[in-house]
Length: 473
Image 1 (cartoon, rainbow, N blue to C red):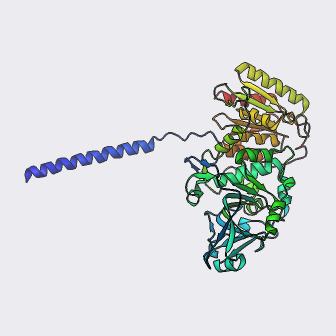
Image 2 (image 1 turned 90 degrees about the horizontal axis):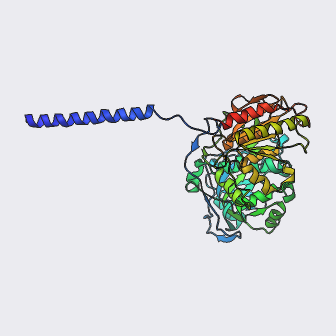
Image 3 (image 1 turned 45 degrees about the horizontal axis):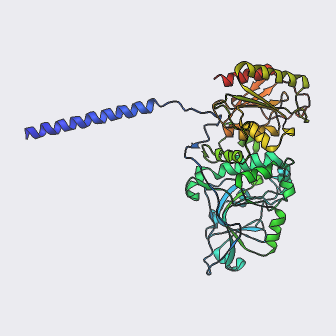
């Protein structure tokens, strides 16, 4: 008995030592975690997912497939959670005679219409005006579906992206507002969110089979440079772009369509709940978790779509040193004072020559779209007066040193490209003559007299000092 008790005591002693040692190791690991390393200015309220995005090329045919069902057995519509104003994911969304239909036995679980869609005539100045009605989006029971649809539909397989804003808003959008604000920073960032992984079956995202604009014509959607068309084809491949005229023809045929997977984006519905000046502010949380590298696959698809030569291979800040790119706007309305432009170019050349950086001074008005994208994709530091050229930061690979420098008329500021750089993971600097500000100390939004001036002043040394600081970190 005594021998047994001694043995038990020894065992208990070893167990106690093991527990203490394990606790020490756990405590040490928890209290000596390395500080988080980031290369972006994202606010901490936007949680990131480290699970990689997997893109899948659609194999579904663009044609519709007939579907029939027994009484009361129409395929039900399901809606992804969480509900986000201006972006909604559906399985089995019906369309008939210009009306979208949600078929469900639990209508109380469907988000309000105003969070999903607009009435097509809302504009920026009327976004709190007339709300969508049952003509825009109807919520019906399976029995009502039998009566309205006649127990049959034509299924459109794959993923359908839809943008349901009216012509006034999308006509305004052009290049920045459609591709950057609507597609990249909103629809694609939402679509790739890990919050929808369960609804979509994991981190794989199928590229859209079609992109539908039921309320605008192709002429209203196109931008002057043709960037929308070229880039969407580069990203989505042989995607079917459908505009109001095509959609009207399809609706006049009297077909009931069932979209197997649908993503409805509506900027008016989004802005009804999320004011621009609020959701773009640093510290305001994005409504969904953001997947790390959410834009990487799209950027790579665009770059792989461009014909390359030995002189047009992206280097960023990898093997060939750092590249500083200044996009001149001296041939446009909003531009630098000519004397300051010349001094800036001279100062950039001196800086780059002294430190072995590569300098690009671009005039995008004289470049093809492919030349613009490839030149900017090599960039480490991108500089320009406020304007659409700064949307080129979409092709800049985010690194520890990737930097966007935006020159304003003193006193002026809007969030457009700061918000874009923050979302993409670039360091941002705004310039007022010889002063600068970053994401941590942004001024209030202001468009003073002279915001669009052709005589904007800038101090060249202020910009070169920022560049040297960023590239010598």
